[in-house]
Length: 618
Image (cartoon, rainbow, N blue to C red; front, side, top):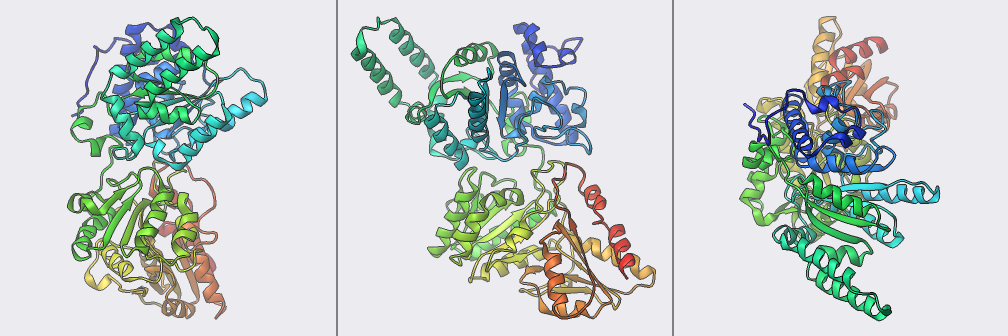
C-alpha cells in the first residue's frame, strides 16, 4: 500500500494531460501549480514503485522544476541537471507524459536525461559533479556566438563534494561566465552529504533569518545615495563583512560568484521571483534553494536509506550481501582494516561495517579520485583499506589507481559492485570497462567470484596479498549458492567439469551460463570441460595448459570483448599451441537500458549463444 502525502484533492481532469511542453505552464495560476505538483508526485511514486528508479531526488525537486520551466524558455535556454537522476519532473513537463509509463523499461524512457528523447535534454549525465563544467563550456559558446540564451545548472549539495564541481566553480568565477547555478540543498547525495561546505549549509538551513537579514542589507544599501566611490566601497565592505559570518556566501563570493538565498524550494512563487531577478545579473550566480528529498512520500521519511535514493535494496543471497556479511567478520579479525566509500555506504553493502566500526569507516562524498588516493595513503601508513565502489564510478579514478596505488604497490582492495551489464540504469551505469582497464595496470590482481561462497574466500585472499592492489568485481544479479567442494582457493582456477572437445571458460557470473551451455553441448555428443578462472589476472597456467588440449576454447565474459580477459587467454594459448579460441564478450558500444538477461542474449552471451558459437567453430 503506497502512502502519499496529498496537498490537495486530485482534480477531475489531470493538469498533466494538458501539458505538451513547458510553455503550457505559463497559463496556470497558483492553485493550478499546487495541484500540478501533487499530480507529478503521485505519478512518480506510482511509476517508480512499478518500474523501479530514483524516488527521493525527484520528489524533492518538483516545485523547483516547475519554477525553472516557467521562468526559463527551454530548450532555447539551457537547463542542466547534476545529476540526471532528478529529472523525472523535467521529463513530465517537456512533453513526455505519455511515454512516462515506460520509464526504465526496455526500449522505453531512460531514467536519465537523453538527447535522443528530447531537445530539452542537453546532456546525458548520471555521474555527479559535471554540470558546472558543461555550463562553463556552453556559456562560453553562447558568448562567442553572441546568442541571447540563458545557461542554468541545477546541482545538489552532494555533487558539490566532487572535485569537478569545485573546479567548475573556480573556473566560472574566474571567467565571470553568465551562468545561473541552482544549489539544490537537501542535505543528501546517495548518503547524507559529507563535506565542510555541507556543514555550513546546515547552519543556513537552521537559520531562516539569514535570508531576511541579507535582503534587509540589500535594501539599506540601495536606499543610500551613491555619493562617491568611497561610500560605495564602504557599503560593499559592510555587506561583505556581514556575509563573512555565513560560510557559504563567503566561499562563493571569494571565488567570484554572487550568492543569493537560501530560499524555500517548495514555494513556486518565491522561486519565480528570485529567478526572474537573477536572469538580469551578469556573471555567475548561486541561488541557494532548500528542498526536502522524498517530499510527499511517508516511507521515505521513516526509512531514508531505503527510499530516499531509490527503491532498490541489498537483496539476500546477492554478492553484495555476501560482501556486507564478511566485511564485519574481517573487521573483527583485523583491527587494521578500514572501509572507504564515495557517498555510497548503503548500496555498496558497508552499512553493517559502519554500524559495527564507525571509527573505521570513511565516506568521502562524491569524490572517487580522492577516495582512491586517500586509501593509498592509508595503506602506506600500515592500514588495510577496502574501497567499496560501483564499477561505473571506479573508472572515474583510473589515473589514481594506476599511479597513486599501483605505482607505489599499495595493498588496497577495490571491491567493485555492479560489474558487467546492470540493466535498467542504462549506458552510464553498465560496468563493462573495469576488467579491461584494471587488467592493464601493473601489479593488479583481479578476482571474479562465480558464487556467494567464493566472495568471502576472495576477500580473505585479497587481504593476505601485500605486494600490490587487488580488485574483486561482482554483478548486481543474484549469486549462485554452491557446496564447499565447488569453492576454490588462493590464486588458482577451478575446473568445474572435465571433457575433451570444447573447453568453456566462464568468467565470474558467466560460469553458470557456460555450465548450462556445456549441458546442451553434452546432450549433442560434444564433450566439454568448464573452467572457473576465479582470478583473471594473473591467469592460472594450469587452466591455460588444460585448455590447449581441447579442439576448441570458448571464453565468456560480461565485460568488453576488445582488450578483455578472453583475448588475454587467447594470447597465452596461441603462444604455445594453435588451439582455436573464440572470445565472447560485450562489444565496444554504449548499451541502452534493458533487462540484463535480454542484453546478454542479444550479444550471444547466453547459453544458446555459446552453443551456437561452439558448434560453428568446431
